[in-house]
Amino acid sequence: MKLEQIETPAALIDVARMQKNIARMQGRMNELGVAFRPHVKTTKCIDVVRAQIAAGARGITVSTLKEAEAFFAAGVDDILYAVSMVPSKLPRALALRRQGCDLKLVVDNPTAAAALAAFGDQHGETFEVWIEVDTDGHRSGIQAEQQTLLDVGRILHENGVKVGGVMTHAGSSYELNTPEALAALAEQERAGCVRAAERLREAGIACPAVSVGSTPTALAARNLEGVTEVRAGVYVLFDLVMHNVGVCTLDDIALSVLATVIGHQEDKGWAILDAGWMALSRDRGTSRQSHDFGYGQPCLLNGTLLPGYVVSGANQEHGILAAAQADPQADAQSADIAQRFPIGMKLRILPNHACATGAQFPEYHAVAPDGSSVEWQRFYGW
Image 1 (cartoon, rainbow, N blue to C red):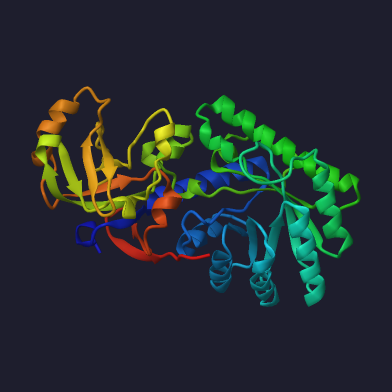
Image 2 (cartoon, rainbow, N blue to C red):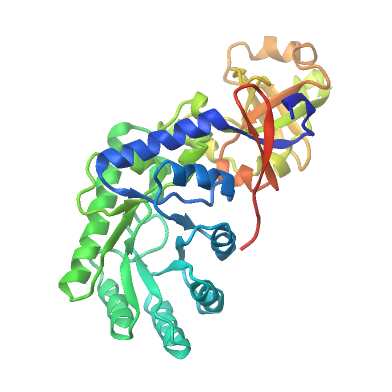
């Protein structure tokens, strides 16, 4: 199917850009001498994941048990569920383990660790559990020097649970925008996670895996001594937030939303699109960065950027395309909005956050260099 034939709004993946992004990340990990375990929550698409594995990825990271179940059913068995485990979800984890899935769980507190150990003992299952480490104060995890780290390790170890490793995610990297700051955070992430592993080992608790990663720190890391694997997700498609962070160009962004011009408000300088926040998502991550792209950066159907324009607003099913107010040509561009963007014209909108935008669609249209496309399914749920 050609782009002109696709009903809008639709999610497009530029396959050539995606393959380039995969090769870039995998090549960097190979140079640093670590395994790479991509985070598949960005795409939730087996076709994309197969491309990542073909390039050299070892196992995957998931954010939901639904992802674990779907990818295991598709033939992927080495899976890290990188969200702290709660007792109510243990039966599903047990079912996956008993089907042969090498599922690794994560905890970051004594309560969850004790519940997991008791559940495993009750059902005769030896779970593999990784402990989440907080290396930047961004979200969850235990700081490397906290006593809680050893408390959790001992609860697991002394109750027959395999401590498979430690993992961390430097999510605060999304707030940075210079190579120096990113490299410094990558080293902070590495050092903190390695230190946590050392403390567990010194306490007599085996800790074979040391897993770090975010897309910015993975690409900025200069030394990964002591690390066994890296995780990253959004790199496979990239987005406008990552562009502002400084780890990709606009031409690296492989995901876009295909939209159609359906009307105008000429007195306001608006072209109305059939892609609102239900298609683009409500994510406004670039509003806190140096360059605000509104709800997305418009491009022509062939991918050519339209500088000076943004999707400035979004309702549920309507997007507003307008001249960027910071652009010196804003008034002139607003004046000819109906001529520039006639009704029926199709555009591609680059997203702020690839994970959030992808989540709005049941499938992707994978676009080849010749403009033809095929459908790749993605899935929903937890």
